Every structure is written in structure tokens, then in C-alpha cells.
Amino acid sequence: MFGHRLIIIIAICAIITFESTISSVIHQPQTDHHDELKLVFLFHRHGERTPYLLYPNDPYKKIITETVGIGQLIEKGKQRLYRLGEYLSQRYYNDNGDRFSIKQKSPRKVYARSSGSERCLQSITLLLAGMFPPEGEWKWNDNLGSLWQPFAIQTVPFEHDTLLNPDYGCPVADHLSNEIYNSEEAENISQNYRNLFKKLANYTGYPSDEMDIVKASYIYDIILSESNFDLPPPEWLDDEMWNGMKILNDYVFSFNSSSRRIQRFRCGL
Ligand SMILES: *[C@@H]1O[C@H](CO)[C@@H](O)[C@H](O)[C@H]1NC(C)=O
Ligand SMILES: *[C@@H]1O[C@H](CO)[C@@H](O)[C@H](O)[C@H]1NC(C)=O
Ligand SMILES: *[C@@H]1O[C@H](CO)[C@@H](O)[C@H](O)[C@H]1NC(C)=O
Image (cartoon, rainbow, N blue to C red):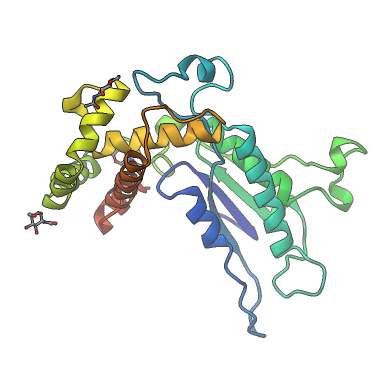
């Protein structure tokens, strides 16, 4: 399927946090003399975005929907992905005889696939722009064409994407997820954080019987995304609540892929 491609780049939209994705690509190349770079398989996430949902009392509804829009890449995220591309370019593309550098800088050597969400498509576009400014024959004019070249980015509509959309309807995965969230471990966590749930429901406007670990993680994500967009946190938020929400958010990421079976069904074929 990938033919003679040297670099395969895939933009995904969930499963792992952006920071951990970056740290997993920043490992040092091995320097064994017999090693030769054959293929790079790179997974990355999108850059910083606005929240993809808002809580009922969210004070920033208007400002977000009327500017960048819900769940969209923001300037900080554009900068990050472009810089990540530049970093990868330096890592694999130096001319000092580094055995790990890629000699042929042809865009034909790259296979790129993204989820169909706009922030992912824009992110992979920026990463490729930072990583592969055109060289030699690939320059196509003296202006933009000497700084940027187009790449084919493969994708499928998000709602039909069984590979890169972790929320693609899957009854088995949903069943496994229910088991995890109804487990004794999850029940204990909910019990320990019941005061936080009460406060969060009160301040955000969600009905208190709907507040749970997953909803608390959504609120955490919303406030984090808003602060990335330079919107100050709501005045009711204190350190204790924030730390509790962060712990719950970490639990959600770990629960959602906590068994081999759910990993397989969520990142399926
Ligand atoms: C849940 O809490 C109970 C009571 O504190 C404890 O005995 C039990 O070991 C906990 N279970 C898990 C899975 O953490
Ligand atoms: C509920 O929210 C109101 C303001 O919206 C606040 O005055 C009150 O202290 C809160 N109650 C609790 C239990 O957090
Ligand atoms: C975790 O799984 C729950 C239940 O399927 C889902 O609602 C939530 O969006 C998921 N969160 C993440 C960060 O994957």
C-alpha cells in the first residue's frame, strides 16, 4: 500500500495527548554504524484548538463561536505544528553526512493521512510546510513556490473513518467502556470526588445527576482550551478544583484505552 514511501505521516485526533506525542518522537537516533534509515512512521496530533464543546454557563460562548469557531485550530496550534515540522526537518534532513538523513527530498517519498476533522487537516498541512520546504526542481515559482509546496493528504469523511475516529460507533467498544466506568475502581474515584462533582455541576450549569468522571474531564478540557486561547479561567475555579479535574481527566485518558480489547476496537480497521 505504501509503495516506496520513506515517510509516512498520520494526523490523528484523540487517544494520546499532544505533549506525549511530541516526546515520543524526540528520542535520539541510535548511532550503531550498521543502522540505516529505511522508513519513518510518524503519528502526531493537531495543535492547540478552541474547545470542541462548551458548558451550559460558559461565559465565552459568543466570543468563541463568533471568532475562530468551535474546535478549531488557533494561532498557537498553527505555530506549534509548523515548528514541529521544522524540528523534524532538522532531525532527519541534515547534510552533514548523518546516516539517518533522508537523501531524496522528493514529496513523492511521503505518504500523509489525516482524520477528516478540519483542525487535523490544517495541522498536517502546517507540519508538512515546516518539514518540506521545496528544494531544487520542486520549487514551482519564485514567491510562495520557493517556500511551500503542495502535498496530497489522504483522508475520509470523519463520520466514516473507522481508523482515526475513536468515537466511530462500535457497540463492542461502548460495552467495554461501560464496564470500565462501572468498575469498582471507577466507582471509588467518583465517590472520592463527589464534592468536586457537586461544585462543578453548580458552577457549570450541568444537572448534578449528569456529573461524572467523563463530564468533569470535558470541563477540564474546555477550560484548558480556553486558556490556550488567552481567555482567563472562570472566577469560581480554584487550585483544588483544577488539580482534581486534571486527575480525573488523566483517568479518562487511561480508562479509555485500559485494556487490549478496547484499544483494538477503538483504533480499529
Ligand atoms: C474501593 O474502595 C474500597 C473501600 O475503600 C476498597 O476496599 C477497595 O479495595 C477499593 N477498590 C478498588 C478497586 O480500588
Ligand atoms: C453554587 O454557585 C453559586 C454561584 O453560582 C455560589 O454562590 C454557591 O456558593 C455555589 N454553591 C456551592 C455548593 O458550590
Ligand atoms: C472517553 O470515553 C468516553 C466514553 O466513551 C467518551 O465519552 C470520552 O469522550 C472519551 N474521552 C477521551 C479523552 O477519549
